[in-house]
Image (cartoon, rainbow over all chains, first blue to last red; front, side, top):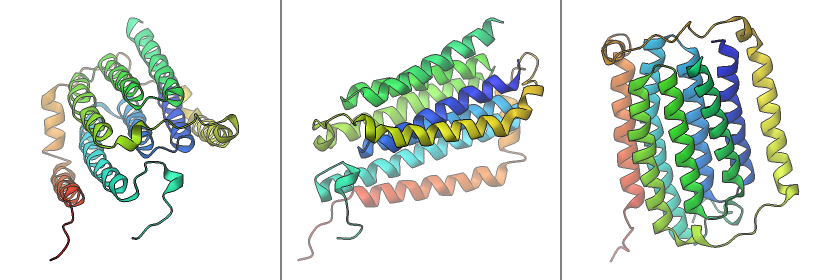
Amino acid sequence: MNAYPLAAISYLLFALATAGFLTCGNLVRMLMFLELMLNAGNIALVALGPPPASQAYALMLFAVAAAEAGVGLALIIAMASAFRTLEAENIKELKG
Amino acid sequence: MILNAAIYILGALAALATLLMFFQRKPVKAAMLMLAVLLCTAGIYLALSAQLLAAFQVILYAGAIMSLFVVALTVTPQAWRDRPAPGRREMVPGFAAAAIILAELLKVSAGLKLMSAGSGFTETGTLGIARELFGRFLFQFELLGLVILAAIVGAAALALKRRPVP
């Protein structure tokens, strides 16, 4: 199989997730789209990289994604209790 | 041939589910669409002969991370409030930026048209991946343990309620 269509699939998923990240204002949804962006990057890595090394790196990226989701959701819950909103446009303070 | 068709179909399904997530106003349904994307990705990994990654994708992404999202949605009632769907004007800049990113990525990787992604993907066993992880990438793998430890400590510190000092 040609590598280009595989790359195109991952790029398309990445671009769609980017569009979602930029358009929706809800913090939980933004984190969801961020995870999908990482997922698309993983697909490109597995599809285009040399097999054992790329898959080992993809496994490590799974762990990074899990850590990112854990910290991100903890941050979102803390912000939700502090600001009483999950809309990014309503959160205008970085301190307080 | 069948595997190639499976990759295209699963990729198209994943793209469709991502697109539907934009217009889904209910957060849990959006989370279920994300689950569909992650499962399609696991299918793509299977078609690429990366069975271990497909298993981890289902266990870690579709299992652990998705349940984290569902828990976060249940403990944040603010996420359930109805918000008017973004208007067309609000969506245009985001889609335009994504289209530019997609066009640039496709343009940059035009050289891949001449490259084959492995004639029939060779099956990579667990042993091969383990040899890489505990051989060449041992330092990175150990460093990853520190990253996860820092993430656990950070998440616990953020989740702990601050009690007023008496």
